[in-house]
Structures are given as C-alpha cells and as structure tokens.
Amino acid sequence: MDASVIAPRYLTDHWHDAESAFDVTSPSSGSVLGQAADCGEAEAKAAVDVAWRAFEHWRDVNPFERAATLRRWHGLIMANQDELGRLMALEMGKPIREGRGEAAYSAGFVEWYADEAKRIYGTWFPSHLPGKRLLAIKQPVGPAYAITPWNFPAAMLTRKAAPALAAGCPMIVKPAKQTPFTALKLAELWLEAGGPPGTLQVLTTFKPGPVTQVMMDDPRIRKVSFTGSTDIGKLLYRQAAETVKRLSLELGGHAPYLVFDDADLDRAVSQVLACKFRNAGQTCVCTNRIYVQDGIYEAFAERFAAATAALVMGDPLDDATDIGPLVDGAGLAKVVEHVDEALAKGASVATGGRATGGLFYAPTVLTDVSSDMAIMHEETFGPVAPLMRFSSEEEVIAQANDTPYGLASYLYTRDLARAIRVSEALEAGLVGVNDGVPAAPYAPFGGVKESGIGREGGPWGIEEYLEIKYVSFALG
Ligand code: NAP
Image (tube, rainbow, N blue to C red; front, top):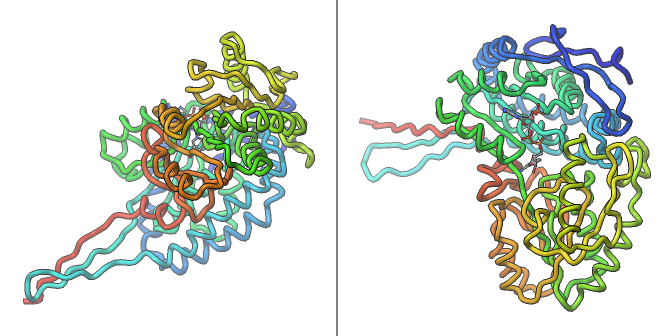
C-alpha cells in the first residue's frame, strides 16, 4: 500500500476529492501509507446541510427497513474482516489478530442495533383524570456528530454510528488523524449496504478544532458523541453548552486490578495479562495499576513477569505478534517518562523496561512500586504493568478509588461475598470479576467521575439518540 493506492477523499452525500491533504504514516515501519483529506470549516458546513437533508428523509424510513440496511452493513463488515484488520495494523500498529477481532466486535454493534431499531417502543400510561389518555413516544434526536480515537478505529465508529442510524439519526464522523482509512472503509461499506447518501459522512482532518467548532455552533447538530482523552472531553462539554446539545463522553481511565490471596493464580495471571497488554496497553480499559495481596505477591510477580517476557513483539501484520508499536512518538515518550520516573523513585524492573527501536517498547513489569509514582495516577497508555502490594480489602478499595477516573476496574477472588462487596464498592462504570476483558456490544460501556457521561452498547446505547415526547389526549 502506498500513496498512489490511498488517495485523499472524504464523504458527505458523495465522495469528494480533497483540495488539501495530509500524510498518514505507519507507526510500525515509519513509511507513508497514503494521504487523507484535510477538511476544514467549509466542508464541515456543507456536511451539516447534508446531514439535515438526510435527517428529513431517514427519520421517516420504516425502522424495519433501517434494520435491514444495518444487517447488510454487518454482513459486509464481516466479509471485510481481514481487510479491516490489515488497515488497522498498518494505520495504528494493532496486531492483526486483534484487528480482525476488533472488526468482528465493531460488526457486533451493527448487528445489535439492527435489531434494536425494531424495538423503539412507546408507552401508554394512566392519568388520574377521567377521559385522558397519555402516551410517551421515542423519536430520533437529530443529526449527530462523532469524534473517534485512533485506538479502536472501527469499534468506536460503529458503537456510535450504529445506534444513531438505527434510531433515525444521520451521523457525521471525524476520525482520529492517525486512522482515517478504517473509518473511510466502513463508510464505503455502509453505502454498499444501501445506506442512503448523507446518512453517514466521514470528514477526515489534521486540525480537529475548526471542523468541531462548526458542529458545536450549528443548532441543527443535536447530539455529540466523543471518545478520547478527558482534557478534550472537558473542552467539548463546554463548547456543547452554547447550543445545549445532548452529549456522550467516553473518556480516559486508570483501571485498577485487585488480585486477592484466594485467587486462582494461573487464571489470574492470564486474565491480567490479557487485560494489560491488549493493543500494547493502549486501551482505555487496560489495567494501569495492579494491586496484589501480600500472601501471593511474590508468586504472582514471578509468574506474571515470565508470562509477560514470553509475549511476542513485532510486525503488526504478522499473525504471531502479540505486541505492536506505540502509536506515535508522543505515546512512546510518555511510556519512557513513566518508567524512568518510577525507577528513579525506587521501582525495579522484573522484565522489559526499555525501548527497542522505532516506536516499540518491550512489555514491562515493574515491582517495588509506590503510590507516589506518576504511573499510579496518570494513564500510561503503553505496555507497562506496575505491581503494588496490599494487605486488607478496605485499604485496597480506598487506593483503587483514589483517582478522578472511574471507567473500568477488575478484581480476582474466589470468595463470592468479597466479589459482590468489592464490585459494589469500586467507583467505576464497569467491573470485571475474574474477567479481564468484559466489554461486549450488548453490555453497557461508560465511565463515572471524570471518565465520562452516558453509556454505549446494548439497549442503553440507543437511548442516547432518542428523545422522549409526551403526548396527552383529552377525549372530551
Ligand atoms: P484525544 O487526543 O482526546 O483524541 C481523540 C479524538 O479527539 C481524536 O479524533 C482527535 O483528533 C480529537 N480531538 C483532539 N483535539 C480536539 C479538539 N480540540 N476538538 C475536537 N476534537 C479533538 O485522545 P487520544 O490520546 O488520541 O486517545 C486516547 C484517549 O482516549 C485515552 O485517554 C483513552 O483512555 C481514551 N479512550 C476512551 C475510551 C472510552 O470508551 N472511554 C475508549 C478509547 C479511548 P486528532 O486525532 O486529529 O487529534
């Protein structure tokens, strides 16, 4: 793949050749993969006009017909699973096995919401007055704007677009600058599935600010859905206030993993490993800090370090690869900074602990970690697992909750009462009990505290794109 294969274009109600463009580079090889359109204010304004026209049509399309279109889209995404996996490996360095998995996960949202389109129910409810009949119906909120991150270029797009489209809302997507091609491919498949022009638009850009400002200023954009960092989420929260838009924010996390003395050690090691090193540690629900109880600390650390050292780092296009590169220089610099700071404050390296060339960083386990280290408070977003000891349940719950974030948290125990007690006490939108990879298209996903607002996935996800209208009938 080279620049002559992927030419810059963007999608409104038809494909446009870009007037200006930017290079998209492989984090693995450093080579230029192609160019993406650098959309600005003019393209954004035109996209809102298109979205409004599409809304006037799409909201009235029979939900069973919307469902059928989504089902065809699902089929096409699955038929292109390998190609989407390959695009993600090229654009952002996700190991290809994981990329294929993400393609299937992204299709899972489309399949789920194809069915949900048919279940947008209203409710008749009683009045205390005679001769009245009361009804609550659900209607699409209107044109929506989505901003997606590079770390799940396919799944974050469908997790937002599928419920929007099922509900009757056209969507404009602005993908991350590192991953425009996966988004464009999904949009191409939507059109191939019979999605009406203008219902799903993709504006790629190197400067997200101006495009987003147009969306925020225009009252016809009724809903904004964002997945990304907490800092940008706060900015969008303020911007959306001006026209009082509905907002979903899926933001950063700092997931604790609590491993209790009674854990099945081998299973705990494999679950923590899967949770930590997925996507080279670059997911919002990857555990960032691992608390291990005194009685099993040494044994856990030894087995976990050995399992980590056995992970295969290499070319994301290779099926054998477990760990690919970091997404960019800034991502690598943050990992180096966190490890160096921890070592300077007394941490030890059990395995890894070094950059290995290009954007690669060896999967790392740190021991002798203390809570004053940056890695225990800030998202590292890399393949580094800091281990800390704890003695009591109360102490570790307090440490786990001592963060402004509240996205995912995990625990490992065989004690049922403890599993219930601790999962209730953890301040998080999702808790994995003996489960390091709990996310699913039919489950609610989202955070508390500064990790976000709203839920995506399952029946909860479509409510974000629906307004409730109350209709009162006086029979006279
Ligand atoms: P980011 O900088 O916030 O970028 C995310 C998206 O926001 C990208 O599309 C980016 O565009 C865009 N953006 C940046 N500045 C913007 C602005 N001023 N106005 C409008 N849009 C803007 O986040 P990141 O560091 O790339 O992604 C990783 C973060 O996402 C982590 O914090 C992670 O925890 C979080 N995340 C959360 C979830 C969840 O579901 N809660 C899932 C995945 C990731 P450009 O690419 O052009 O900069």
